[in-house]
Image (cartoon, rainbow, N blue to C red; front, side, top):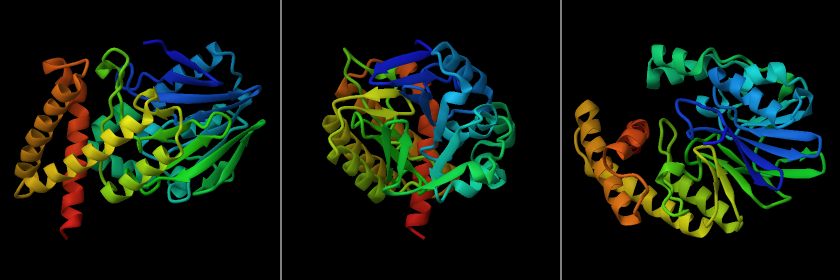
Length: 315
């Protein structure tokens, strides 16, 4: 996969290289001499992101905005280090997440609780704080200017309560982070893309996610941009699939019994069977061992998110 994918209309994706090619995109919106980055990937990937910007002819002083869809570290982990080398960039983030960008200690601790300290240090590095004066808190209806371009903010909980999406008013396209799921290009078949919900811990809320997906689809964008990975079209079909799969994930979580590791193992098996049926039904581009290798980490995170939701839902 190319390190820079140019979609036209001043929109491109940088393949950050986080974990593997084609996993986490840093999207660029370029309006003449003004540039915005949507999400940042992680500290270890920041050098590649900066090199890709330079190769695309972008000078550090041209970047006006770092637009964070939410503060999970595969989306916001490099915001601090990028802010240090992009001197004019302000960092837009949901008002619930702003304090964690100014002081990332609790954010790091929460990530360690999910992944373990050794993996977090290796994968994410040390998340750097951002000076509060460079942080712009955004929520529903916030309007940001990028040169002559207008970017409007949607408050889109469900994946996380601090999740926003960014609507590019010039094209009508929407940058959706994880709200519109993930869509790996390896699963495409004859140009047909597929989506999966992202139910990672700890703030998965199915009703809110349904509402957020419906709001995105109701705007009738010709394209959305998911961080995992890139541009998607055929939005009505994909939104319908997301609604169906959110319900299927929730039903699967409710169907398992017990608690703790035994419950999670049952959920892991049940979710894998659901995805195997989806692969067969939709004729995904990958099957068998290659598919499970690609989705192993996502299955595990979805298991944790669904288990956390069941525990809180039943408490």
